[in-house]
Image 1 (cartoon, rainbow, N blue to C red):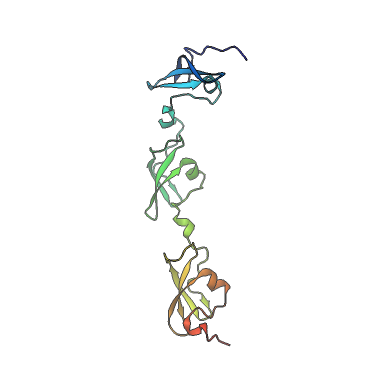
Image 2 (cartoon, helix red, strand yellow):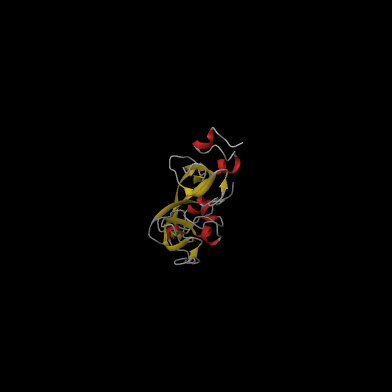
Amino acid sequence: MGKLVDLSGQTFGLLTVLKRVEDRKPGRPMWLCQCECGKTVIVSSTNLLKENGTKSCGCLRHKQSPTLIDLTGKVYGKLTVIQKDTTTENGKARWICKCECGSTVSVLSDSLRKGKTKSCGCSQFQLQHDLTGQTFGYLKVIEPVQNERIAGNETRWKCLCQNCGRTVEVGSYWLRHSDPYGHCKCTRFNKPQ
């Protein structure tokens, strides 16, 4: 085991080592440090000496980085950045954004700048295949509908039966991949020959 190096009086980032305190684990020297913000904290030799070690009592996480790029007012997809999110605790910059749909969301700076996040999540529900105006058997698709009673993300469509004039609601999959007749009561049992 190597000789203990006395760190008293040395400075690491915002921390100045005051004195050695009782070790929490054998062979792991602990030090009482004074942070520039006024708080004291106990830190191990290992965490003080390593390259990306402890540099403050934790207050650095809440300080704005000098390299932080201000995204206020910038637009990323459907999101407009309103202000920096000050509630984050992990040190990563987040921004409060207003989506075109009216929702607000907190997004990581990195996700905005790299194009990973472009909406509050509303975009993922956009139609992959717009069936409006298409005809399947006797059914002419009028418009997409939202039905909270139906689980899942499958788009449902309001369709006009051109045989009887009724409107029916049918899922995308069933319109595109099944027998087009039989979705309306008028043709369900009397399919055209």
